[in-house]
Image (cartoon, rainbow, N blue to C red; front, side):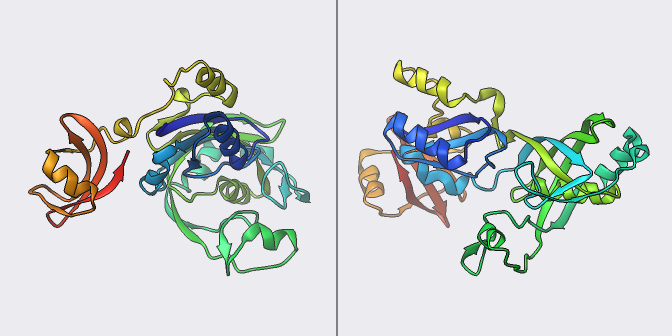
Length: 288
């Protein structure tokens, strides 16, 4: 089976846990295009079979999240799983909608963001969380990200919580964003809840839980699997004949008169896979 399934990840599962569970269910190769923290929920696209080879086309997707920011408390991991390392007063007068909206709007646009210490970014061959667990300090270089939109969904002065949605670029750490928002509000904070609702063109409304997928799969219902052909339905197509298909399958570049792009490849209207056209030549990329 080749394609993508959208899993609605539940809390307390790592992305690796989900991959392993789907592997056991489908007995096929499974990969993902980006992880979610164990405490986070939401849409997690998984690649099945030959679709694991298209991950290179899916890793730069923009994302959308629902977030709950807890103010007044700072943790070492910047989320609910960490140890409390600082507590600070929260000026509830600053938690009026107009002021919070003004603060959130300052984050819209391109900017440099420092990733959290508890992250999988590698420095000198080691992941940052490996340094953090040993209490070792290491220089973390800021990375350019972009916030496209950020909106308040709820303000709870009593609990000192701000709920908001955010649309952002790949590489944006919501835990760091939460800490930066808290700082601009004159206090500290951490990411209490995170739910990813959109990854690129994949929406949480089209996702299923692991148990839902397993039940359908065991009943030979594969309706939740998005085929490679459908994923690339907006890409142009090239129809090959038997002669140039043989060359194509053997890795021979074929001269074509089309623009450079990723193409869906067909023979007699049957989907063969994906090809890349560069400087007038079609090169095999993926054969299903």
